[in-house]
Amino acid sequence: MPRISGVDIPADKPTYISLRYLFGIGPTTAVEICRTLGLDLQRAARELSDDDLARIATLLDKEYVIEGQLRRKIQQDIARLRDISSYRGFRHRRGLPVRGQRTRTNSRTRKGPRKTVAGKKGVKELR
View 1 (cartoon, rainbow, N blue to C red):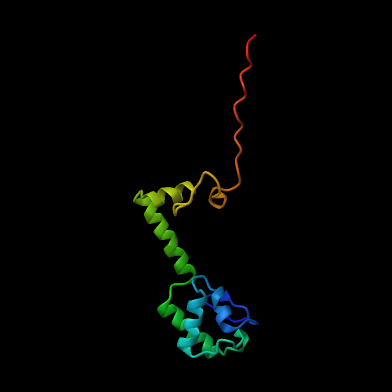
View 2: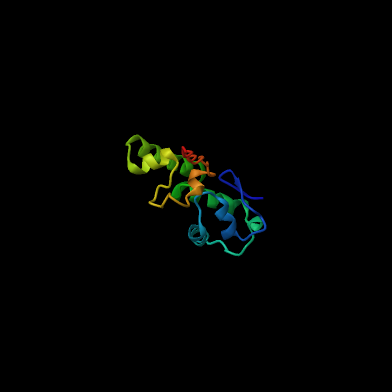
């Protein structure tokens, strides 16, 4: 398995698919990287030479923010929103949807499993 930026990419898949296993590299960016370096898109990742892997790693270090650096940047951005007490920071802090979605129904991904609260019991009528 070839290794780029500390991540093992699948050897059996085409190069442009294998590059997508890196956090921060999507479909368009993967094709762009292959075209920039003049690599065959359909060539399996195991067929890449050490020189090709080194060229890919160099390009990624210079041009793109990926893996640990990108994760750190995202966390810093969220921490900044929390520190300045913005609405989005408040939503992050409370674990609620950040981008305007409704919360009366849905939003189970952010809120987690339902926490059922027992309803009020009816007061017995006096006779």
